Image (cartoon, rainbow, N blue to C red; front, side, top):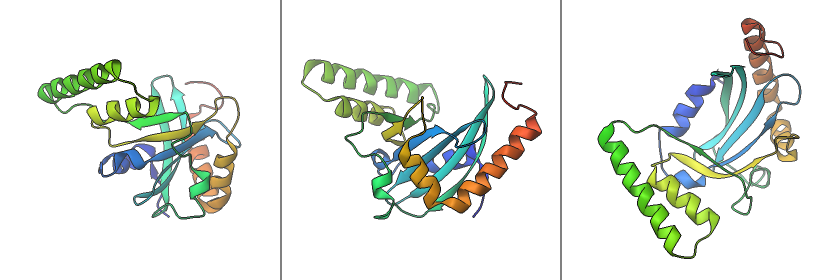
Length: 183
């Protein structure tokens, strides 16, 4: 298992936009310590486990690893499906002004079309993410008050990764001398 910086994991996730709307995510507070856990899953691209914390209001630090090469039958029930009301997206900024204008036109068109016809929130979200060329988006389970049960289930399923990533993140927190407050 190779532990990498959280941004490297997101770069891998965004590196290929194949079936971008098939991603699913679960996130919440860590079981112990400062920070958050995030699990991203895709049926064919794999499952990624990330642990992050805010070093200060402008800098996020963290670690992550790929814990599975695909979502199998045992993991499927632990990840949200389209019926979940939460959504997430990973975005890349436009490469240049021309691309930004093209994306803006597509967003305007998506908003116009959905404003004129009956639509569902999921369809609207999907069309906006496609207009923005989002490389990864989909349903998300997140509770800002308490840790989702499915996140505990995923942490139990990948117990070794949970321990290793916790230790690595705790080392980052100690190295940054953050403790429980911003630096």
